[in-house]
Image 1 (tube, helix red, strand yellow):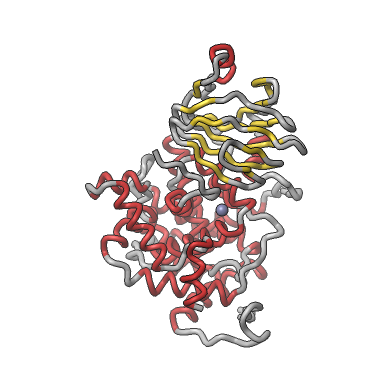
Image 2 (tube, protein in one colour; image 1 turned 60 degrees about the horizontal axis):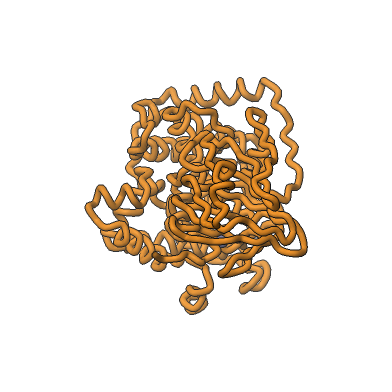
Length: 221
Length: 220
Ligand SMILES: [Zn+2]
């Protein structure tokens, strides 16, 4: 398998060519990106097999966590198949500067999952698929790999440290496919409380970039 | 009543969009806004990283040995059949909106709504919201109206104003039920907006009863 090196360069704050020191978890996530690049560039079946071995069990679990309308028992295996086929077909368009392989595969899985559920529970013709909402304009400014990695590391580290009450809402929304309103009903909490817990979690993970949060951000970097 | 004057979708909408739980009509509006807004795209990438991290932490499920071969067989047979070339042109409208405009099952057409406003309704596979394009001619006044349901608006071209602010390309607005407003097209050119309207709107001007049938919602 041919390994491609990805230059980890932040044009804004790092001298060009400087390679950042990655910790173990980042190295791991980088390996998936290299495998995905090989699949895209060389139709590398061995690389694909490794991705499959790692992601298929996670994708099945992701499908089974769902409690959304339209859920059906075979969703797990169907989703694994549909997502992995898309991964193969779209790998050539994967851009490691924009997202890690794991994040990219998550977006494919999220789009497939919602489309499969909508097709099951909807009798009307659906002119749009979920991935149609995610087209980025061509002139999009690429996020530098280091900045992308930094925010990913921040999200990873702070997600594991969130108070349980915030973590459980995010899990309901992302894994079970619940809206904030549904989460508030299930947890017996006012909607406002659910919203403010999510907001606190987003602040902790430094996800918000709107001007009102800029101070917190510049502080950190 | 709290008036949402922020010109971006709020956190709740972005989180649900990232998690894939936001309903169709709202998703179309958020995606249209994202086409114009780098700030929200950045937030969204980070939100996707949350989803990605939760996916990674999931308890791996048991996978049948044969599934990999099934997938490879499907991949091989798909590659054997030639695919249609999907040449994407550079488009000034967001992809989701362009696709609705070109929907072969329902080509939307412009219809006169009032002297200065045209509407083209979309079919989106849901009926809670009427999703449509509105075109306000340069300097055009729209009838003063209030809403019985929520309305999302994204400016796709040009700009318009109301009593509170001027809204430019990409701005995302939420009107709450009960909000009364009278949008006005900018003087320097027509304005095209995407809107998703939850329920019928009532006109509040004295001639409202004349306009009402035209503004009645057509669930599609
Ligand atoms: Zn925005």
